Image (cartoon, rainbow, N blue to C red; front, side, top):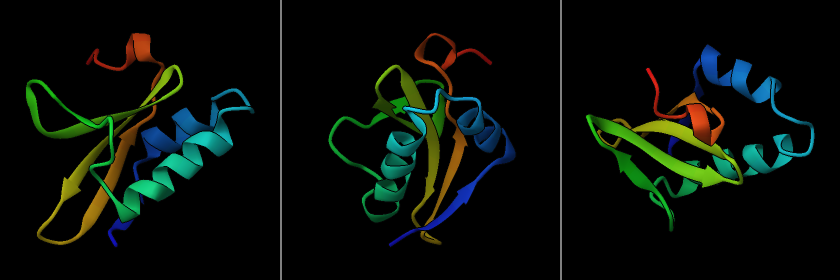
Length: 85
């Protein structure tokens, strides 16, 4: 099991989500702590340590530190804004 850290930006993103999506995103994030590479995960091009998983129209962007068993949630943007810097 991985230690789970949520960046302030990700917390802000989650709090801004529609109320229906918050429990779904939360469940997905908690499941990543057990399996950071579930079915449907993808690496993000140009950012070697960054991965993403889909949850409806939202993307959970995260990094996995396998050496220290740490999973960091970076952001939870809408899919249209997920890959912009």
